[in-house]
Image (cartoon, rainbow, N blue to C red; front, top):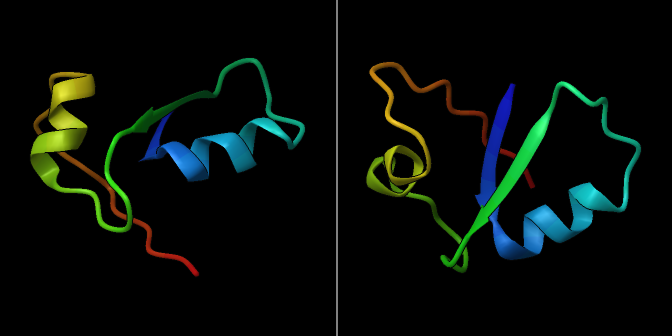
Length: 53
């Protein structure tokens, strides 16, 4: 599983206990992630988007 988030979000997630099968990648965007930013990390055809606080 790949989680793409902001660099701030990635820092917070790395402070948690994350299973080895989960890869967290931070991108240099401050508050909103674009589909282009996600696809730049890994080529994809389908993106599941989960919004949170």
